[in-house]
Length: 401
Image 1: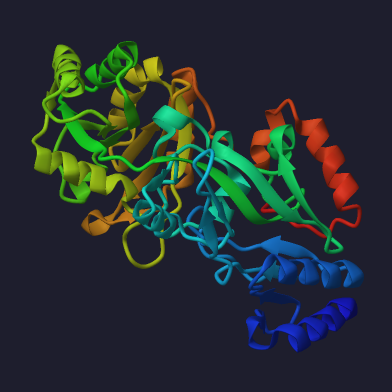
Image 2: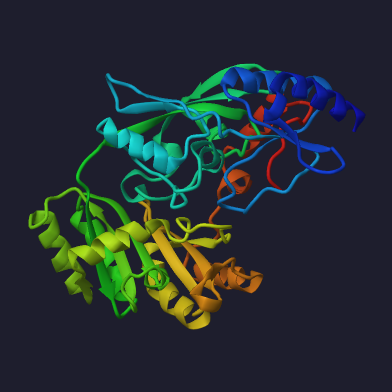
């Protein structure tokens, strides 16, 4: 621990109040760099003193971070961005930028994100890049990693490098194991007047059939999601499953007509515009709430498997609120929260997680693997381990356990 103290003193001299001790024993600390150059400086000091480095996100997945031995990096001061004005629709940005703040800024520039997490009101760009995942917009654009043009990372010792192409697959989703992400270039779409829609289904079997029908119609949908009964908790339709999303067509046009025909053919009923906007606004629920966030249980189910999975979840785990995001690959990310006293959403118990996973597996799906857990069954696993050894032979970069 003596070597740690030497590193901490050196960083305190450099960063002043932006460096702070986080536990009484003085073995854990955090620092808030303001640029990639400062992150490189921290990495150089950490490497010289053998000081473990970890990344600190917004706590939207696992809750607030606990102090631990070593140094954690906070990125709240790294929020710069620049929209490229020629060629492809791109934005260059730093990891501390919150997703909702980024989307609001892009709209003023006539641009929009292709995908963002359902935790967007609180989560940051760097946190989701570190884990990868599915979210809002994945019906058209898939995983976050499919929409990244490049990333810049800092390595132990302070070296910086820019990754593009196939190398991105060893950095995005690696949770900092192969480098500290200090910048990224994301692909954008033109900002448009996305038209929200929502439909309710009394029979849950009709919802997955409607999803398959919409896919067969090849309607220009950007996002497609489902919920039950989470929307009811936030003031939405009280009862039945809700299918909601956005499309690029004008109201009253071909898209709207085909939506209504497909949904009604499978037992659904389109909701009025006000309800559609309310459902769309609830896509972040419960992340939009104040206070500590519950940590959801999650699993992935193929669309056809929903026909059996949704009734089983309603029967076996009626105390869970379930939301889902449909991805272009035909999988549905289901996240759930426990409905507690006063209809407050809480972190699911272990039995709830086991039940959700069991239902998902029997429906042809399984765990929602993101971050390093995804590499346990990933074809690039050996390449990732090799790169980790090359860039971090001392094991400075720490990852979530």
